[in-house]
Image (cartoon, rainbow, N blue to C red; front, side):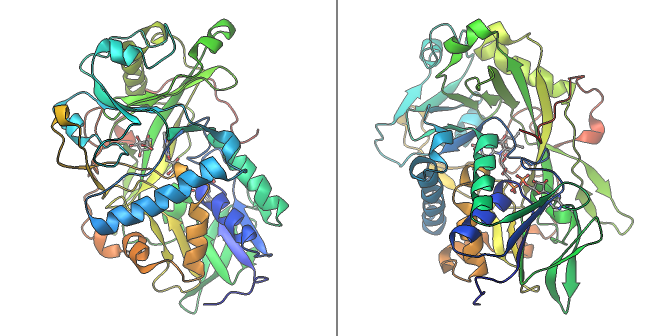
Length: 460
Ligand code: FAD
Ligand code: FSA
Protein backbone atom coordinates (compact mmCIF):
# COMPACT_ATOMS: atom_id res chain seq x y z
CA UNK A 1 0.00 0.00 0.00
CA UNK A 2 1.43 3.39 -0.95
CA UNK A 3 0.65 6.17 1.48
CA UNK A 4 1.16 9.75 0.30
CA UNK A 5 3.70 11.65 2.38
CA UNK A 6 1.07 14.32 3.00
CA UNK A 7 -1.69 11.88 4.07
CA UNK A 8 -3.24 12.54 7.50
CA UNK A 9 -1.81 9.96 9.91
CA UNK A 10 -2.97 9.53 13.49
CA UNK A 11 -1.03 7.97 16.36
CA UNK A 12 -3.11 7.01 19.42
CA UNK A 13 -0.85 7.16 22.47
CA UNK A 14 2.24 9.30 23.09
CA UNK A 15 3.97 6.72 25.25
CA UNK A 16 7.12 4.77 24.43
CA UNK A 17 6.02 3.15 21.18
CA UNK A 18 3.74 5.99 20.05
CA UNK A 19 6.54 8.55 20.34
CA UNK A 20 8.92 6.21 18.52
CA UNK A 21 6.32 5.78 15.77
CA UNK A 22 5.80 9.53 15.43
CA UNK A 23 9.55 10.10 15.28
CA UNK A 24 10.09 7.52 12.55
CA UNK A 25 7.11 8.73 10.53
CA UNK A 26 8.61 12.21 10.58
CA UNK A 27 12.09 10.94 9.77
CA UNK A 28 10.65 9.14 6.74
CA UNK A 29 9.15 12.36 5.48
CA UNK A 30 5.48 12.03 6.46
CA UNK A 31 4.32 15.59 6.96
CA UNK A 32 0.82 15.33 8.41
CA UNK A 33 1.19 13.32 11.63
CA UNK A 34 -0.90 13.93 14.77
CA UNK A 35 -0.38 12.16 18.10
CA UNK A 36 -3.15 12.01 20.72
CA UNK A 37 -2.69 11.34 24.43
CA UNK A 38 -4.82 12.15 27.52
CA UNK A 39 -1.68 13.33 29.35
CA UNK A 40 1.04 15.84 28.50
CA UNK A 41 4.31 14.18 27.43
CA UNK A 42 5.63 12.35 29.39
CA UNK A 43 2.28 10.76 30.25
CA UNK A 44 1.95 9.91 33.93
CA UNK A 45 0.55 6.49 32.97
CA UNK A 46 3.17 5.65 30.32
CA UNK A 47 5.17 2.59 31.38
CA UNK A 48 8.18 4.39 29.93
CA UNK A 49 7.81 7.46 32.17
CA UNK A 50 10.47 6.46 34.63
CA UNK A 51 13.91 7.61 35.72
CA UNK A 52 15.63 4.56 34.30
CA UNK A 53 15.13 1.38 32.33
CA UNK A 54 17.37 -1.57 31.66
CA UNK A 55 18.96 -1.57 28.21
CA UNK A 56 20.69 -4.69 27.05
CA UNK A 57 21.87 -5.85 23.67
CA UNK A 58 20.81 -8.90 21.71
CA UNK A 59 19.97 -12.31 23.00
CA UNK A 60 20.10 -15.56 21.12
CA UNK A 61 17.65 -18.37 20.69
CA UNK A 62 18.27 -21.88 19.55
CA UNK A 63 15.33 -21.66 17.17
CA UNK A 64 16.70 -20.18 14.01
CA UNK A 65 13.65 -18.08 13.07
CA UNK A 66 13.29 -16.51 16.52
CA UNK A 67 17.00 -16.10 16.95
CA UNK A 68 17.27 -14.17 13.72
CA UNK A 69 14.33 -11.90 14.50
CA UNK A 70 15.54 -11.23 18.01
CA UNK A 71 19.01 -10.40 16.82
CA UNK A 72 17.70 -8.01 14.20
CA UNK A 73 15.35 -6.17 16.58
CA UNK A 74 17.83 -6.17 19.46
CA UNK A 75 20.67 -4.91 17.28
CA UNK A 76 18.54 -2.14 15.79
CA UNK A 77 17.54 -0.95 19.26
CA UNK A 78 21.04 -1.11 20.70
CA UNK A 79 22.45 0.71 17.70
CA UNK A 80 19.93 3.45 18.40
CA UNK A 81 21.17 3.85 21.97
CA UNK A 82 24.81 3.81 21.00
CA UNK A 83 24.91 5.46 17.56
CA UNK A 84 21.88 7.74 17.14
CA UNK A 85 22.86 11.21 18.43
CA UNK A 86 19.27 11.68 19.64
CA UNK A 87 19.43 8.74 22.05
CA UNK A 88 23.15 8.41 22.83
CA UNK A 89 23.13 11.00 25.65
CA UNK A 90 20.59 8.98 27.65
CA UNK A 91 22.35 5.61 27.61
CA UNK A 92 24.76 4.56 30.35
CA UNK A 93 26.88 1.50 29.65
CA UNK A 94 27.25 0.58 33.32
CA UNK A 95 27.10 -3.19 32.90
CA UNK A 96 24.34 -5.47 34.14
CA UNK A 97 24.26 -8.28 36.69
CA UNK A 98 21.73 -10.99 35.80
CA UNK A 99 21.18 -13.35 38.70
CA UNK A 100 18.86 -15.72 40.52
CA UNK A 101 18.75 -17.73 43.73
CA UNK A 102 16.76 -20.93 43.46
CA UNK A 103 17.62 -23.71 41.03
CA UNK A 104 14.39 -22.96 39.16
CA UNK A 105 15.43 -19.33 38.93
CA UNK A 106 18.93 -20.17 37.81
CA UNK A 107 17.47 -22.53 35.23
CA UNK A 108 15.39 -19.63 33.91
CA UNK A 109 18.23 -17.19 33.86
CA UNK A 110 18.86 -15.81 30.44
CA UNK A 111 21.95 -13.96 29.56
CA UNK A 112 22.25 -11.94 26.41
CA UNK A 113 25.34 -13.68 25.26
CA UNK A 114 26.27 -15.85 22.36
CA UNK A 115 26.98 -19.42 23.33
CA UNK A 116 30.67 -19.94 23.53
CA UNK A 117 33.35 -17.76 24.99
CA UNK A 118 32.29 -14.18 25.58
CA UNK A 119 34.89 -11.86 27.03
CA UNK A 120 32.17 -9.48 28.23
CA UNK A 121 30.68 -12.08 30.55
CA UNK A 122 31.87 -12.92 34.06
CA UNK A 123 30.39 -15.59 36.26
CA UNK A 124 29.67 -14.30 39.78
CA UNK A 125 29.04 -16.58 42.76
CA UNK A 126 30.67 -15.56 46.05
CA UNK A 127 29.56 -12.76 48.37
CA UNK A 128 32.85 -10.99 47.67
CA UNK A 129 32.29 -11.27 43.89
CA UNK A 130 28.87 -9.66 44.22
CA UNK A 131 30.05 -6.93 46.59
CA UNK A 132 32.93 -6.03 44.29
CA UNK A 133 30.55 -5.20 41.43
CA UNK A 134 29.71 -1.87 43.10
CA UNK A 135 31.82 1.05 44.23
CA UNK A 136 33.47 0.41 47.63
CA UNK A 137 31.01 0.22 50.52
CA UNK A 138 27.84 0.28 48.38
CA UNK A 139 26.93 -3.40 47.97
CA UNK A 140 27.34 -4.30 51.64
CA UNK A 141 24.83 -7.18 51.59
CA UNK A 142 25.68 -10.88 51.80
CA UNK A 143 23.80 -11.82 48.58
CA UNK A 144 22.64 -15.08 50.21
CA UNK A 145 22.31 -17.89 47.68
CA UNK A 146 22.74 -15.58 44.68
CA UNK A 147 24.31 -16.84 41.46
CA UNK A 148 24.74 -14.90 38.29
CA UNK A 149 26.64 -13.38 35.43
CA UNK A 150 27.97 -9.91 35.06
CA UNK A 151 27.72 -8.44 31.57
CA UNK A 152 30.58 -5.95 31.67
CA UNK A 153 29.54 -3.80 28.73
CA UNK A 154 26.92 -3.59 26.02
CA UNK A 155 24.29 -3.38 28.77
CA UNK A 156 23.21 -0.79 31.29
CA UNK A 157 20.39 1.72 31.65
CA UNK A 158 18.80 4.68 29.93
CA UNK A 159 17.27 7.77 31.45
CA UNK A 160 13.85 6.75 30.25
CA UNK A 161 11.79 9.90 30.84
CA UNK A 162 14.40 12.22 29.36
CA UNK A 163 14.85 9.96 26.32
CA UNK A 164 11.07 9.88 25.75
CA UNK A 165 10.80 13.63 25.96
CA UNK A 166 13.82 14.15 23.67
CA UNK A 167 12.28 11.85 21.05
CA UNK A 168 8.92 13.65 21.29
CA UNK A 169 10.61 17.05 20.94
CA UNK A 170 12.52 15.84 17.91
CA UNK A 171 9.33 14.49 16.33
CA UNK A 172 7.71 17.87 17.02
CA UNK A 173 10.67 19.71 15.50
CA UNK A 174 10.24 17.56 12.39
CA UNK A 175 6.60 18.64 12.12
CA UNK A 176 4.56 16.18 14.20
CA UNK A 177 1.60 17.70 16.10
CA UNK A 178 0.99 16.49 19.65
CA UNK A 179 -2.52 17.01 21.04
CA UNK A 180 -2.28 16.10 24.71
CA UNK A 181 -4.33 16.42 27.87
CA UNK A 182 -7.94 15.58 28.52
CA UNK A 183 -10.48 15.90 26.94
CA UNK A 184 -8.75 17.00 23.71
CA UNK A 185 -6.14 14.19 23.56
CA UNK A 186 -8.10 11.38 25.18
CA UNK A 187 -9.34 8.94 22.57
CA UNK A 188 -12.74 7.55 23.51
CA UNK A 189 -13.20 5.38 20.43
CA UNK A 190 -11.77 4.53 17.07
CA UNK A 191 -13.92 5.42 14.07
CA UNK A 192 -15.12 2.08 12.69
CA UNK A 193 -16.60 2.56 9.23
CA UNK A 194 -17.04 0.21 6.25
CA UNK A 195 -15.18 -2.56 8.13
CA UNK A 196 -12.22 -0.24 8.45
CA UNK A 197 -10.84 2.29 10.93
CA UNK A 198 -10.96 5.88 9.68
CA UNK A 199 -9.43 7.70 12.67
CA UNK A 200 -10.46 8.34 16.26
CA UNK A 201 -12.81 10.43 18.37
CA UNK A 202 -11.54 12.32 21.42
CA UNK A 203 -13.38 13.08 24.67
CA UNK A 204 -14.17 16.63 23.48
CA UNK A 205 -16.26 15.06 20.70
CA UNK A 206 -13.81 15.86 17.89
CA UNK A 207 -13.43 13.30 15.10
CA UNK A 208 -9.86 12.96 13.86
CA UNK A 209 -10.06 11.51 10.35
CA UNK A 210 -6.97 9.73 9.15
CA UNK A 211 -5.76 7.69 6.21
CA UNK A 212 -3.90 5.40 8.62
CA UNK A 213 -4.37 5.08 12.39
CA UNK A 214 -1.69 3.68 14.69
CA UNK A 215 -2.83 2.15 17.97
CA UNK A 216 0.02 2.56 20.48
CA UNK A 217 -1.94 2.93 23.71
CA UNK A 218 0.07 0.42 25.75
CA UNK A 219 -1.92 -1.31 28.50
CA UNK A 220 -5.00 0.79 27.58
CA UNK A 221 -5.13 -0.39 23.93
CA UNK A 222 -7.69 -3.08 24.76
CA UNK A 223 -10.19 -0.39 25.76
CA UNK A 224 -10.30 0.82 22.15
CA UNK A 225 -10.22 -2.43 20.17
CA UNK A 226 -11.28 -6.03 20.69
CA UNK A 227 -7.94 -7.83 20.86
CA UNK A 228 -9.59 -11.26 21.17
CA UNK A 229 -7.87 -11.78 24.53
CA UNK A 230 -4.40 -11.12 23.10
CA UNK A 231 -3.63 -8.38 25.67
CA UNK A 232 -3.56 -8.83 29.42
CA UNK A 233 -2.83 -5.57 31.24
CA UNK A 234 -0.43 -6.57 34.02
CA UNK A 235 1.25 -4.24 36.51
CA UNK A 236 4.54 -4.08 38.35
CA UNK A 237 5.69 -1.65 40.98
CA UNK A 238 8.57 0.72 41.49
CA UNK A 239 9.88 2.64 44.49
CA UNK A 240 12.50 5.35 44.99
CA UNK A 241 14.86 6.08 47.86
CA UNK A 242 16.50 9.49 47.99
CA UNK A 243 20.13 9.45 49.06
CA UNK A 244 21.61 12.17 51.25
CA UNK A 245 23.63 14.69 49.18
CA UNK A 246 26.93 13.46 50.65
CA UNK A 247 26.14 9.84 49.67
CA UNK A 248 25.36 10.42 46.01
CA UNK A 249 28.85 10.42 44.54
CA UNK A 250 29.65 7.14 46.31
CA UNK A 251 26.75 5.26 44.69
CA UNK A 252 27.46 6.55 41.21
CA UNK A 253 28.66 4.00 38.64
CA UNK A 254 26.84 1.15 40.32
CA UNK A 255 25.95 -1.31 37.54
CA UNK A 256 22.36 -2.48 37.16
CA UNK A 257 21.75 -5.27 39.68
CA UNK A 258 18.98 -7.65 38.56
CA UNK A 259 17.83 -10.80 40.29
CA UNK A 260 15.06 -12.36 38.19
CA UNK A 261 13.35 -13.68 41.36
CA UNK A 262 13.74 -10.64 43.59
CA UNK A 263 14.00 -7.44 41.61
CA UNK A 264 16.46 -4.86 40.39
CA UNK A 265 17.93 -1.41 41.04
CA UNK A 266 20.14 1.23 39.47
CA UNK A 267 22.68 3.88 40.37
CA UNK A 268 21.09 7.16 41.58
CA UNK A 269 19.74 9.66 39.06
CA UNK A 270 20.67 13.36 38.98
CA UNK A 271 18.39 14.04 41.95
CA UNK A 272 20.11 11.34 44.01
CA UNK A 273 17.18 8.89 43.78
CA UNK A 274 17.70 5.15 43.49
CA UNK A 275 14.87 3.25 41.78
CA UNK A 276 14.09 -0.26 42.98
CA UNK A 277 11.60 -2.73 41.48
CA UNK A 278 10.50 -6.01 42.97
CA UNK A 279 10.17 -8.90 40.50
CA UNK A 280 7.23 -11.30 40.34
CA UNK A 281 4.69 -12.51 37.73
CA UNK A 282 2.75 -9.24 38.03
CA UNK A 283 -0.62 -7.96 39.24
CA UNK A 284 -3.84 -7.98 37.22
CA UNK A 285 -7.08 -6.12 38.00
CA UNK A 286 -9.54 -8.68 36.72
CA UNK A 287 -13.15 -7.83 36.05
CA UNK A 288 -15.76 -10.30 34.80
CA UNK A 289 -18.42 -9.05 32.41
CA UNK A 290 -21.97 -10.33 32.31
CA UNK A 291 -21.26 -11.90 28.90
CA UNK A 292 -18.66 -14.12 30.55
CA UNK A 293 -15.64 -12.27 29.19
CA UNK A 294 -12.69 -11.52 31.41
CA UNK A 295 -10.48 -8.45 31.30
CA UNK A 296 -7.83 -6.79 33.39
CA UNK A 297 -8.44 -3.06 33.75
CA UNK A 298 -5.49 -0.71 34.32
CA UNK A 299 -5.74 2.18 36.79
CA UNK A 300 -3.39 4.91 37.95
CA UNK A 301 -1.91 4.89 41.46
CA UNK A 302 1.17 6.50 42.96
CA UNK A 303 1.26 4.01 45.83
CA UNK A 304 2.41 0.39 45.93
CA UNK A 305 1.04 -2.60 47.85
CA UNK A 306 2.64 -3.00 51.29
CA UNK A 307 3.63 -6.56 50.32
CA UNK A 308 5.55 -5.06 47.42
CA UNK A 309 7.28 -2.58 49.76
CA UNK A 310 8.31 -5.56 51.87
CA UNK A 311 9.79 -7.35 48.81
CA UNK A 312 11.74 -4.22 47.86
CA UNK A 313 13.10 -3.96 51.41
CA UNK A 314 14.05 -7.64 51.40
CA UNK A 315 15.98 -7.13 48.16
CA UNK A 316 17.80 -4.24 49.82
CA UNK A 317 18.53 -6.29 52.96
CA UNK A 318 20.35 -8.81 50.75
CA UNK A 319 22.22 -6.23 48.68
CA UNK A 320 22.41 -2.75 50.29
CA UNK A 321 21.16 -3.30 53.88
CA UNK A 322 22.24 0.20 54.85
CA UNK A 323 19.30 1.53 52.77
CA UNK A 324 16.73 -1.14 53.64
CA UNK A 325 14.79 0.83 56.25
CA UNK A 326 14.93 4.25 54.57
CA UNK A 327 11.63 5.92 53.64
CA UNK A 328 10.49 5.80 50.02
CA UNK A 329 10.47 9.16 48.27
CA UNK A 330 8.15 7.94 45.48
CA UNK A 331 6.31 4.84 44.32
CA UNK A 332 3.82 3.84 41.69
CA UNK A 333 2.26 0.97 39.85
CA UNK A 334 3.18 0.68 36.18
CA UNK A 335 1.16 -1.21 33.54
CA UNK A 336 2.33 -3.31 30.60
CA UNK A 337 0.29 -5.43 28.19
CA UNK A 338 1.22 -9.09 28.18
CA UNK A 339 0.37 -11.11 25.10
CA UNK A 340 -0.29 -14.83 25.55
CA UNK A 341 3.09 -15.80 24.12
CA UNK A 342 4.92 -12.59 25.07
CA UNK A 343 5.57 -11.69 21.46
CA UNK A 344 4.92 -8.15 20.23
CA UNK A 345 1.90 -7.35 18.03
CA UNK A 346 3.16 -5.08 15.27
CA UNK A 347 0.93 -5.55 12.29
CA UNK A 348 -1.77 -4.20 10.03
CA UNK A 349 -5.08 -5.31 11.56
CA UNK A 350 -6.36 -8.34 9.59
CA UNK A 351 -9.85 -6.93 9.09
CA UNK A 352 -9.44 -3.14 9.50
CA UNK A 353 -6.99 -2.38 6.72
CA UNK A 354 -6.11 1.18 7.80
CA UNK A 355 -5.34 0.29 11.43
CA UNK A 356 -1.73 -0.40 12.39
CA UNK A 357 -1.02 -2.01 15.75
CA UNK A 358 2.02 -1.23 17.85
CA UNK A 359 1.04 -3.21 20.93
CA UNK A 360 1.98 -5.93 23.37
CA UNK A 361 5.29 -4.44 24.42
CA UNK A 362 5.33 -6.94 27.24
CA UNK A 363 8.38 -8.89 26.33
CA UNK A 364 9.86 -11.07 23.68
CA UNK A 365 9.72 -14.28 25.62
CA UNK A 366 9.49 -17.20 23.25
CA UNK A 367 13.24 -17.01 23.09
CA UNK A 368 15.14 -20.02 24.22
CA UNK A 369 18.60 -19.19 25.19
CA UNK A 370 21.42 -21.59 25.33
CA UNK A 371 23.78 -20.82 28.13
CA UNK A 372 27.21 -22.28 28.03
CA UNK A 373 28.54 -21.55 31.48
CA UNK A 374 29.88 -24.94 32.44
CA UNK A 375 29.78 -24.74 36.23
CA UNK A 376 26.07 -23.86 36.18
CA UNK A 377 25.38 -26.78 33.92
CA UNK A 378 23.06 -24.57 31.92
CA UNK A 379 23.76 -26.18 28.62
CA UNK A 380 20.04 -26.31 28.00
CA UNK A 381 17.33 -24.05 26.61
CA UNK A 382 15.73 -21.29 28.70
CA UNK A 383 13.05 -18.68 28.35
CA UNK A 384 13.79 -15.06 29.15
CA UNK A 385 11.95 -11.80 29.13
CA UNK A 386 12.79 -8.82 26.99
CA UNK A 387 10.52 -5.90 27.58
CA UNK A 388 9.61 -2.94 25.45
CA UNK A 389 11.28 0.26 26.61
CA UNK A 390 14.67 -0.67 25.23
CA UNK A 391 13.22 -0.54 21.71
CA UNK A 392 12.35 3.17 21.96
CA UNK A 393 14.99 4.27 19.40
CA UNK A 394 13.98 1.77 16.73
CA UNK A 395 10.56 0.15 17.20
CA UNK A 396 8.76 3.01 15.46
CA UNK A 397 10.66 2.18 12.31
CA UNK A 398 9.24 -1.35 12.35
CA UNK A 399 5.74 0.01 13.07
CA UNK A 400 6.09 2.35 10.05
CA UNK A 401 7.32 -0.64 8.03
CA UNK A 402 4.02 -2.34 8.95
CA UNK A 403 2.16 0.62 7.43
CA UNK A 404 4.36 0.50 4.34
CA UNK A 405 3.81 -3.27 4.12
CA UNK A 406 7.50 -4.01 4.15
CA UNK A 407 8.08 -5.98 7.31
CA UNK A 408 10.26 -8.89 6.19
CA UNK A 409 8.20 -12.12 6.19
CA UNK A 410 10.33 -13.87 8.81
CA UNK A 411 9.80 -10.94 11.21
CA UNK A 412 6.12 -10.61 10.36
CA UNK A 413 5.56 -14.27 11.18
CA UNK A 414 6.68 -13.69 14.76
CA UNK A 415 5.06 -10.30 15.52
CA UNK A 416 1.81 -10.65 13.59
CA UNK A 417 -1.77 -10.37 14.95
CA UNK A 418 -2.38 -13.93 16.13
CA UNK A 419 -5.69 -14.39 17.94
CA UNK A 420 -5.22 -18.18 17.92
CA UNK A 421 -2.34 -17.70 20.35
CA UNK A 422 -4.85 -16.35 22.92
CA UNK A 423 -7.60 -18.93 22.45
CA UNK A 424 -8.82 -20.19 25.86
CA UNK A 425 -6.18 -18.02 27.43
CA UNK A 426 -4.99 -18.85 30.93
CA UNK A 427 -5.24 -15.42 32.61
CA UNK A 428 -3.05 -16.65 35.46
CA UNK A 429 -0.13 -17.76 33.27
CA UNK A 430 3.12 -16.54 34.84
CA UNK A 431 4.64 -16.40 31.34
CA UNK A 432 8.00 -17.59 32.59
CA UNK A 433 8.34 -14.97 35.33
CA UNK A 434 9.50 -15.70 38.87
CA UNK A 435 9.48 -14.00 42.26
CA UNK A 436 7.08 -13.01 45.04
CA UNK A 437 4.53 -15.79 45.48
CA UNK A 438 5.46 -17.17 42.01
CA UNK A 439 1.93 -16.62 40.75
CA UNK A 440 0.04 -13.81 39.04
CA UNK A 441 -1.49 -11.66 41.80
CA UNK A 442 -4.58 -9.48 41.53
CA UNK A 443 -5.04 -6.01 43.01
CA UNK A 444 -8.40 -7.06 44.48
CA UNK A 445 -6.42 -9.20 46.94
CA UNK A 446 -4.26 -6.30 48.12
CA UNK A 447 -5.27 -5.24 51.62
CA UNK A 448 -2.78 -2.50 52.39
CA UNK A 449 -1.05 0.18 50.33
CA UNK A 450 1.79 2.55 51.12
CA UNK A 451 0.99 6.13 52.05
CA UNK A 452 3.55 8.00 49.94
CA UNK A 453 3.55 11.63 48.90
CA UNK A 454 2.13 11.81 45.34
CA UNK A 455 4.28 13.51 42.68
CA UNK A 456 3.30 14.90 39.29
CA UNK A 457 5.43 12.94 36.81
CA UNK A 458 3.56 14.20 33.77
CA UNK A 459 5.41 17.51 33.88
CA UNK A 460 9.12 17.85 33.49
P1 FAD B 1 3.19 3.18 27.25
O1 FAD B 1 4.57 3.74 27.30
O2 FAD B 1 2.55 2.87 28.56
O3 FAD B 1 2.31 4.20 26.42
C1 FAD B 1 0.92 4.11 26.30
C2 FAD B 1 0.41 5.52 26.06
O4 FAD B 1 -0.97 5.46 25.70
C3 FAD B 1 0.50 6.42 27.30
O5 FAD B 1 1.19 7.61 27.00
C4 FAD B 1 -0.96 6.69 27.65
O6 FAD B 1 -1.16 7.96 28.24
C5 FAD B 1 -1.60 6.57 26.28
N1 FAD B 1 -3.04 6.33 26.34
C6 FAD B 1 -3.74 5.58 27.22
N2 FAD B 1 -5.06 5.68 26.97
C7 FAD B 1 -5.19 6.49 25.89
C8 FAD B 1 -6.31 6.98 25.19
N3 FAD B 1 -7.56 6.65 25.53
N4 FAD B 1 -6.10 7.83 24.15
C9 FAD B 1 -4.85 8.17 23.77
N5 FAD B 1 -3.75 7.72 24.42
C10 FAD B 1 -3.93 6.90 25.47
N6 FAD B 1 11.33 -2.19 29.58
C11 FAD B 1 12.65 -2.21 29.34
O7 FAD B 1 13.07 -2.30 28.18
N7 FAD B 1 13.56 -2.13 30.35
C12 FAD B 1 13.18 -2.02 31.66
O8 FAD B 1 14.01 -1.91 32.57
C13 FAD B 1 11.79 -2.01 31.93
N8 FAD B 1 11.37 -1.88 33.21
C14 FAD B 1 10.04 -1.84 33.47
C15 FAD B 1 9.64 -1.68 34.80
C16 FAD B 1 8.30 -1.64 35.12
C17 FAD B 1 7.88 -1.46 36.56
C18 FAD B 1 7.33 -1.76 34.08
C19 FAD B 1 5.87 -1.74 34.38
C20 FAD B 1 7.73 -1.91 32.76
C21 FAD B 1 9.10 -1.95 32.44
N9 FAD B 1 9.55 -2.08 31.12
C22 FAD B 1 10.88 -2.11 30.85
C23 FAD B 1 8.59 -2.25 30.01
C24 FAD B 1 8.38 -0.97 29.23
O9 FAD B 1 8.26 0.14 30.09
C25 FAD B 1 7.13 -1.09 28.37
O10 FAD B 1 7.17 -2.29 27.61
C26 FAD B 1 6.98 0.07 27.39
O11 FAD B 1 7.23 1.31 28.01
C27 FAD B 1 5.58 0.04 26.81
O12 FAD B 1 5.44 1.03 25.82
P2 FAD B 1 4.02 1.36 25.19
O13 FAD B 1 4.22 2.49 24.27
O14 FAD B 1 3.39 0.12 24.70
O15 FAD B 1 3.12 1.82 26.42
O1 FSA C 1 15.13 -7.52 31.26
C1 FSA C 1 14.49 -6.49 31.30
O2 FSA C 1 14.48 -5.68 30.40
C2 FSA C 1 13.69 -6.21 32.53
S1 FSA C 1 12.20 -5.43 32.22
C3 FSA C 1 11.62 -5.05 33.85
C4 FSA C 1 10.28 -5.63 34.21
O3 FSA C 1 9.97 -5.15 35.51
C5 FSA C 1 10.29 -7.13 34.20
O4 FSA C 1 11.25 -7.62 35.10
C6 FSA C 1 8.89 -7.63 34.53
O5 FSA C 1 8.85 -9.03 34.49
C7 FSA C 1 7.89 -7.05 33.56
O6 FSA C 1 8.11 -7.53 32.26
C8 FSA C 1 7.97 -5.53 33.56
O7 FSA C 1 9.33 -5.14 33.29
